Length: 448
Ligand code: ADP
Image 1 (cartoon, helix red, strand yellow):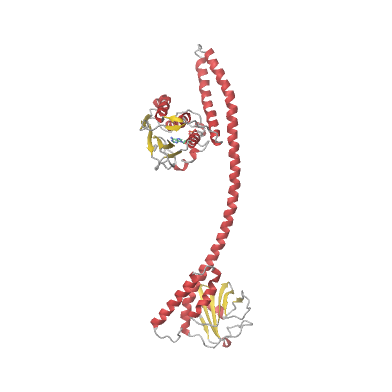
Image 2: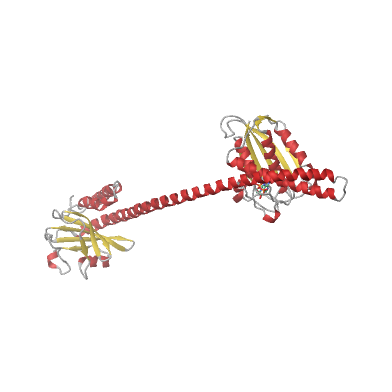
């Protein structure tokens, strides 16, 4: 480099080129620990020196992180204390570069033992966020070897070096953070695995409890049912006794429904649900269910519409299970729709490609009501067993009474039935509101 360069433009060009080279060398360095060394290797393009080092500040200690031109075997991690009034303290305080023409002639200089005396010294601070984080120290053997204009050149390199060092520091921190995070993630994963295994066990216990309880209940229930029916025929003539027996029978039927639901749910859990497929006409199923609910619909003044279901193709499915599915969904629609509302069952065919189920065609049945709706936060969990949102006092208060709760098994069974057919079920609703009645729309997609 021509130090006698007079032409300002040429100097500027040269300087930007050197800067770019330094920047490039820094940005392609993969190992952050190499950064200080790269700075020292690139610096002679800007300011030639004979011995140079980069020191990072740790309170009142300067730690050499890279050095060039030191005697062979010089310890790699030399520490230099910052002393009262010495050159380093002057730089830390002033945040300005310091040029000494002859170190032997200043009291602020303390010669490090074992280092040959180089007379000229140039110290340039590395300043980040108004703080001196370290410095570049360059020496030349001759006295007055550095020229004042070289200070501005090296200052520019130093600011670049600072950015690189700060980034490198950040990267180091990031690497550490990454390691810590990875460790944490591993720990948490282990915890989750253990918790999951525990939950699985609890769930299994719950399933077998349901199954045992249901089967144990069903036997005596059948007995009671048989005797009550007998009692009914014995007291047939007795006007006072007949309604009592009728009441007992209604209660028993409801109990049997619950017990059967429990058995269904445990079958679904243990994947024992048997699907006997035949050609099924969905329209017929819906019509039968409509007539089953005829009294309730009339009492509750709920309009019931069936749209585009008649022209649906027959599907291969278990007709009993599908009856159970739609009985449940329509029953729920009645239960959660206020008097005077409406329920619409609508069918459509989804062609193979659009169905998202893979190859064949599917049918989609919507059960739309004008009821209280379902909060989006609960639209997934309502399909879990024993999940109900109503208060417990409402339980078993009636199959079709407005908001009359149940055991929370209906939708779990519905989902089990749909999944056993290779289909999908979900609900859409703007939210839950018992004043504006936004309604819910249950979607059932079944392969043809
Ligand atoms: P439940 O026996 O309580 O009716 P389900 O599994 O059938 O149990 O339903 C679970 C919950 O989902 C219900 O408690 C209710 O809060 C909500 N839900 C089901 N269907 C509807 C609907 N059509 N409109 C509003 N909420 C519904």
